[in-house]
Length: 431
Ligand code: SF4
Image 1 (spheres, rainbow, N blue to C red):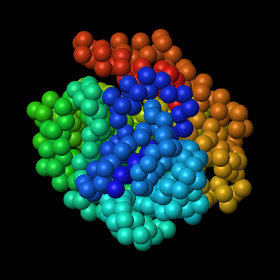
Image 2 (cartoon, helix red, strand yellow):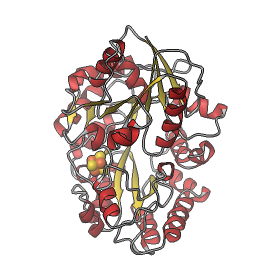
Image 3 (cartoon, protein in one colour):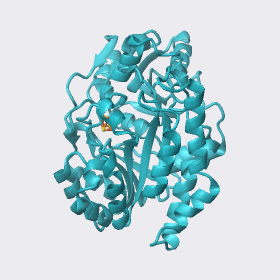
Image 4 (cartoon, helix red, strand yellow):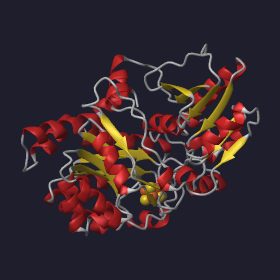
């Protein structure tokens, strides 16, 4: 069969820069994974809507579209058009997993949760004329069965950033986090030797671990890092702050393995908020120590912050910026609280009548889609943007680069790229 896999994206303006970034330098891990789990007898074609247009004249057998909440409307539009032309369409990914009944209105079938087992079964059923409306993965997929993604970047394999996944799931229950609808709570680790083989097969020096956190099974991560030492890779990965502040051995091994940047959900500087959202890994008064430790081992840290929690008052923006400057964070991401469907936060806001819009295209972490408690919607929007612009002002970017005591040519290039990619690139790409 001919199978078309589409990554839905809301991009309206596609330029050659989009193509350079997404096709050659940062290809879609979702599409790479879907291609890898599609049985070999099928001919797979991929469309990454971040830089490619959908050809509605496509004349194959079945179309699979993956989407998140923000791209759900786009996915539904594409699905409707293909179905109008008589094609069979399947929807999957975070949003259809959280809202399967809604997705079903636009698809012949919906894949709910992880797809390693259900997608091949669905294709078999379709071939036999027995397609079911829903395919639900009820139990977490055995990590042994998670294959390496089918790498797509052909043109500049040495310069692309290769996404890699060593673990899946997260045992924590942060109220705003949508990952559980696909990955579940059970933390699973892929066999280390398979991950190492995969890393060794990647021509590029740069890796990005897409794992929710590499600080949940420490024995596993330390072994992974030990085995990565000497492979001459450079990578970024996610982690929880509680571990980074304490575990010197982990930091030493990470640095030896080539870790350049830890990406950490600080979420907020207000401990009351941390407690209310169930982020049990975070203790605000320990943030500073953790940042210092990471710097001591020669690595960078990016803090992710969210605004609009019920304990946030209008002074939260300036207080957060002060703290970030004091801790000397290398990078920061600022998002407006977004109650993604399927989360306990969404259910709470819905119960309280605080959801303003169900236009999913607005669920992009940049719009206010609910009524905040202690400030107006405009204040929340303006405050978050003001913070972003201040943190990534040109003088501040330069200051961060040149305060690095170990700055050499390579670090200068890396740091400059990290700074640019953080904001300017987002702007150019229209995120
Ligand atoms: S620790 Fe991170 S991945 Fe896990 S539930 Fe919380 S926000 Fe989600």
